[in-house]
Image 1 (cartoon, rainbow, N blue to C red):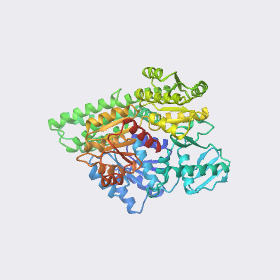
Image 2 (image 1 turned 120 degrees about the vertical axis):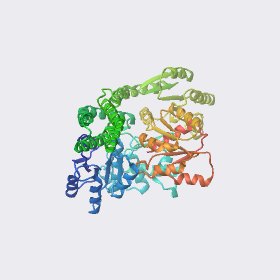
Image 3 (image 1 turned 60 degrees about the horizontal axis):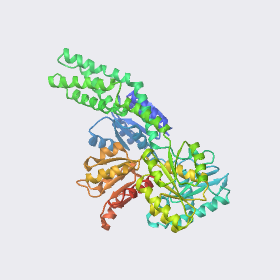
Image 4 (image 1 turned 90 degrees about the vertical axis):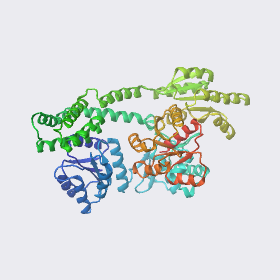
Length: 614
């Protein structure tokens, strides 16, 4: 993909270009509107990033000129203007596809670019591969070792789902949500039938029989590639964000002196204020331009306070009454504070770099702790051997009572409990052990390993509080892969935003979900929702139906109207069972509605399931 960037701020243009390059975009950069017109007229681009205030030809005029000439390439306008509602309307009327206010988050910009390119391009994803199995979305062909495999549409959809999300487990309900319309929702038996038929066709073509694995108690997934199992599972999302913070801080260090040099024009204004009674017109215009540029650029480097100070300087210069004593004092105050913010050796961004680096090191050092409870000796030894290669630590307890003591002293990420079933009395004792463990560690995933695998026994084990049921006969390697999938769940560290006016309920829910390793943010003023929501960009949104003055259903519609959040899971909390209200909730774009009386454990499981479907 090729992008034309029209931006006169050299530092911002270089930083933007570098970020786009990292996402495999090819970027042409020009510094004024006339050059932008020339490049857009003579070269082909997939998207144009266009600053509004530029020399020679402003962005609004350039956008309008391109549209008048029948130029349909997507255009995103970038501006530091703060009159957002009026200017946004002008930009969209000029033909822009999107309008972003500086300072902006680079990752948000990348997300918006991807959303627009997905909408405006017919190019499909590259060929999807697993071992020698290939699926080409463009030709819709499936091959194994160059031999074509003929699949039904549903079988093709299943295979594409697994190939696009290798290492991720899909429950039957998640598969139904992904592959069936609301008018033709089947039962889970139908999913199992399609899985079985797909396996048979793959086996007949020579694909290994265990390519599609059953994760008991959870669903189905594509087995990790045999060449490098440890790399087949997704890495944790927070580490990636920390890398980005540290990288941005390094860029700031590189350009900090250039920003300090830009303050020289304000020093010249300061000298004029002391020595003269009028301000040179050209100097005033230059100072306004620098202030405008700084306001739009500094915030993108995490220096929000400096960005606001530059914006206030720009406004003060535009008023043009600097020689009044009050305005003069205000100008000098803003200049001193702005210089301090830019020169500060321990700026917020640099503090962020230090924190990010420390967290990155901690993240790389942090090993997962597994707790085994009364586990079969042979399986325990095998688990210890296989865990060592993955950097996991295994804690051993001979009973649930001993396990509870270990839980006090150690962080535990996942536990495995042997279900003894020599006779019914042993089985019942093990079931009580599940309840006893769950009382002490409600948020620790619990795997139950049992040699009794009929439906009634499975049902009873899950009712007592186990998260996953594993048959004793499964291979040790398969059990390890299942554990890896669980440990690398997308839900770990996920950002959850909860909106409700019920403050007591909000804080109780937030504190409870924090125990499940979710990062929760509460919003108890619905009118302040949007700014908080955009800034946080959560992984899942929870709305309380009972809100005023903003209707939660309308709020949901606003979120769904933005392409960035088409796929965001949205959950409604309500005790309203009125069919008409429930219908409105779903038509507004919600994924589900659940009672406010739901237990935290059940809510956490639902959230994890929804996040792992994405």
